[in-house]
Length: 170
Image (cartoon, rainbow, N blue to C red; front, side, top):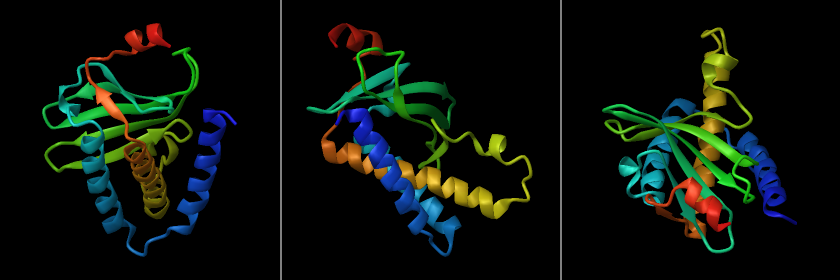
């Protein structure tokens, strides 16, 4: 079984688990998950604020982990975090999670993933607050579990190792 098949199985298990985890007060729990994700991102990538365009995390016997900077402002950084399961860098990057990091509040919130769009694209009516909260909960809970996985596998990031350099070494 290849890495991409294992990832698909892991994603299915996480989706089932996320359906079972249903906190009573999702608003408070969502804030705690976003705070936890912020801390985990900086444990995974200690020099995250120094990343200019992209960086690569490597762990023995595991697919490369990529982070790309989408936007930087004085108080936020928007990034995409993804795995690459082949040497072809135009191939499958999954999961691909778009994250906004709020440096002043020390929160990391998932905006979208490779399957689900951003809240504003999915919910045109802001009156669907319960569905919006459930949607945000699933996205951010998934990131929490994925970051746990990456930290447990011992990924190390080299902010000087660029995607183009990795393509030459694969």
